[in-house]
Image: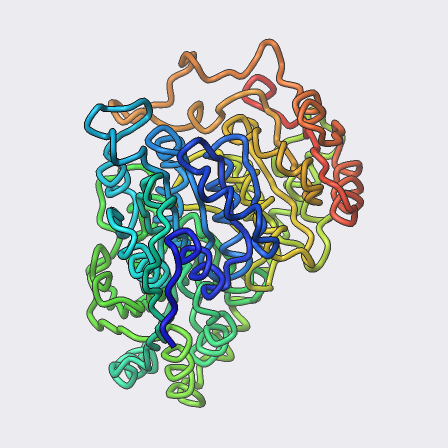
Length: 549
């Protein structure tokens, strides 16, 4: 049956059919038609953020929790500009978002009204697709296309420009029905890949974030065990793509080409699953892939195979189904798999002992070393916790000590735009209210997203925000210069004090309870109690910086 509705009602109709129940936004005058419509739509919750950066991060976390596109409404050119960091993060992390911004009334655009701008041109570099909606009859169709594009591999954010006067029109327009989503099958190159892995003497797997997004973690475990392959996460991974406590887990690949090469040169066949690029953070004069290594690459999009990783065997297909087929093809064919697993388990146990010894050495020191703090924080996490991490240097220590196995238990963004953590933690708890959320934040990162605390307080979202407070941009004090490869002392602009930042004061300003923690035992207790609570809590964690070293 054909549905005909005025444009604004058609928009809400499409949202409902796309299973949208929450709208994230920071409104202005161009959003008034939408706000008027939402006022009479009790099934559509409007979540206000006091800055667009927080709005985008909340939507990102919500989309990852619900595993469907989140809907965001921004305000004209200024709001879109403030939200562009979040769009960049979402595109890099392949988070499906449908983002709209209200455009000024078309009847006076030629007069260059306040806050008007070329929204389509602004958004184009940081999203998958853009839609310039100029006619009411096009809105429902373009909105359907936007939701489909947001989830089509590689997933990501999509943008629509919506003129204010268009949403106020009364003329009914046709609303097209929702289309079924096509499904990928198993890659036809399974047999070829299986033969290479079966004959490999030193196989390895690089688990990209497409594994977690594709619900293929259990299947990847079966595959790794079938051939005894060491498994590495992609550099700065966004989620749990392989259990961190599994004996075959070899840790995260370094974030430089030289570091990646040093790890992969010990292997002869490497299966790269669910990532089209290693994205090194700092330049090194080396290629990531040693010439002696045979690369098998599996992606769910043909456009990204071989994009930066040269594939000897290119596989395109559904990640979960293809990994499952590969595991079945290898079952019982690699007699050496058990010995490889035993050897990997001994090596993993040795690494764990070294890390725990280092953490224990930090007990009794004031302020705490980062490793001791991260070890203590991990000890306080509930078994079903979700960790949202945005801590540049402390986050590396956190990855060393976490033993998370459950998919979806860890969130990060490889986009690198700061201010993600607070909002993402709030959005995730809203999208999956049955799982406790602990956000681990660098003090510099937290400064970019503090406005999100207002939303946490307003909606009483029970998230623990643990701010690692070392009073500096430590990563910049430890990174060599690209000019001469030397770490220089006394670089300006890298200290966040004096005066020292007291995040408990900031939290209370926004209406969030807060506590300052000075030692590991107290930190473990506070994290455990806060994660079990029913209100947001900020924990200001004093850790050592360069001045304390």
